[in-house]
Amino acid sequence: MKIQLNGIRDERFERPLHHITQLFFEESDLHFGVVENAELTVSILITEEADKVVVTGVGVLANSSKKFESMFENSFKEAETEKKRFTLVKGAVFYVFLTILQDVTGMIQQWGILTGIRPTKLLHKKLQEGKTKEQAHAELREDYKILDSKINLMQAIVDRQLAVVPDLYHLEKELSIYIGIPFCPTKCAYCTFPAYAIGGKQGKVDSFLGGLHYEIREMGKWLKENNINITTIYYGGGTPTSITAEEMDLLYEEMYESFPNVDKVREITVEAGRPDTITPEKLEVLKKWNIDRISINPQSYIQETLKAIGRHHTVEETIDKFHLARSMGMNNINMDLIIGLPGEGVSEFQFTLDETEKLMPESLTVHTLSFKRASEMTKNKEKYKVADRREITEMMGLATQWTNEHGYSPYYLYRQKNILGNLENVGYSLPGQESIYNIMIMEEKQTILGLGCGASSKFVHPVTGKITRFANPKDPKSYNDGYEKYTKDKIAILNELFDLEKTK
Image 1: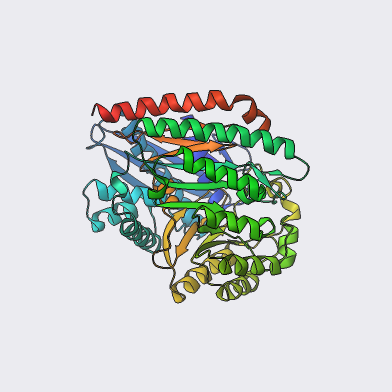
Image 2: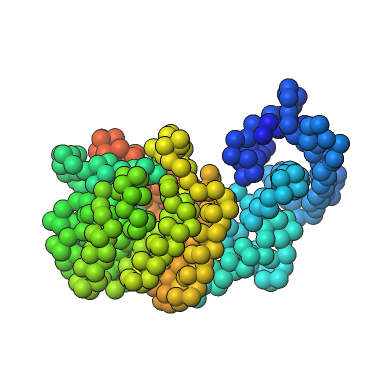
């Protein structure tokens, strides 16, 4: 669809408006100003007054006299800064543009104009400000055009999170730690994580682990000196179980020796997502260091799908390794499923749910496939045929129904750009088996310190909540060349953050 958009001259609007257009048209062509052969022309008028902004819009299809009109008004009453005023103007423009596209296409966006990846963070903020649930819901409905079904999902998740972590709003004096291991047996077609095939690269692994041990020691020293406790620790990647059992053992020993009060950390998770990395020896190491929360990720129980996306393990191997882990005392296992993988439709996803029922992991994360810009799948879209919007929505409905019928409740969600059907990724769990780390990373109520290759730190200001990001290099060589500097840089940021807290 070729669209001419009149009345928008501020570049800050352009990228978000492109994203909204893509929600409706997979092949969209949005132009700001006059363009030849436009199939749809939308004209927006922004009127700012002292106390409010009024945005009106009209859409006209080529060769048609029918008009699609919309209007939205935002009050400036609580806009203390110019930035806040602009945010309100922007929201009004997005609302009008989205409404016109919905009327033109007949397609309703369940998440409205919301393009951020953390919807529940928005609801938490409104409730923290003292608003009632009814007030918060009304604002989400009226200001963002979010449907009630999604608002109810958000509220169910917020309620669950506050039950699991009652002090969620008061954890700024602690932090959580993410440790990135950048190696996998092979790289999946949809993946953009820092992940390198481990075969034949033992030299790189050794050098990387040397740097990681250094980071853990130095950060542990700082935490002890400043009496900062750790809420959760999460080993991700890559696949952290790609390294050997001996390397895992030494790494966890370093963690216990370096970090403060590890016995009081609420949760330690190790992603063992690729079944082809799991061995009895590695499970023994996990047991030795009291790590019982792991992920074993089937993604799908269709063998042809696994082959198409580059996961070089069998369906049987996933099932066998799950039973092996269970028999060796792993009593909190997460499994990931992906809706919309190439070649899969409703019947294939139903089969995957039926197979999941035979295992009943403690938690289940249902992802909707996202075409991430740097992934193999995005670069070669013509190779990977995926389900249409209607099927994707039906599959998400199946997941919602299945989890409800089997005693799972949603406890976190996040969204991504270019996600199929403009839907979401939802984490479900049985009672008491929620991942506290997943709650912490999504709701951004405390600092998450990233150690290792490709690990991103999110420093949350303990007073203002402002977030500063700091990313370690994604490739092992760059990480190995500079881990001492990156460690010092992060400690400098931590000193500033926690000194501010002491002088509050």
